[in-house]
Length: 189
Image (cartoon, rainbow, N blue to C red; front, side):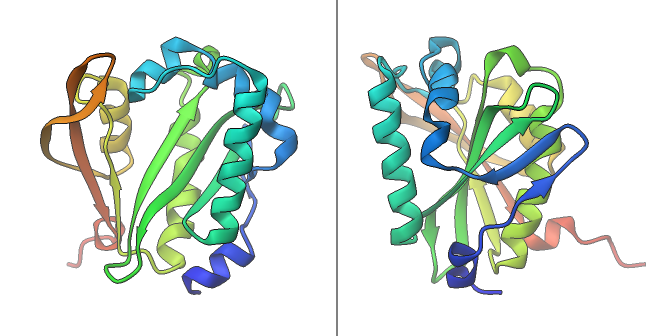
């Protein structure tokens, strides 16, 4: 599979608690519930959305990214509640180096329940099948839960990027994590 095929046929994944599917315009209201929460958005250095219209615009821009082939966005539906509780994406593609950045966010009511640990493995596995060689993630350095999640998923901590992100009048450090396709292969022997 190549990157063009991935954009044309984004898959749906099922886990024991989640339905992971491509984002749609109808998801804007559910996404607003976590995009408007300052406890969520401060974790990645962005201001919360202040209106549903802002989230609708954000969703439209992300869907245009699918068309422009610069990002792929999925949402997570919690099966018990039949509603969207989070999202993840591949973005910042570097086609020449077969590299992409992983992004994710989750409604605060579902933190510390293993939702991301359940949702991201099938999405990452799909990314490797579509030809990605390396995934990167850049959580704020003081976002310990995100760093722990990435390590649990097999990412390697590769260093701290000092003063990389400007937010609320100050420069913040971001941690750099990388996951290679080979990191997930069982060792020989």
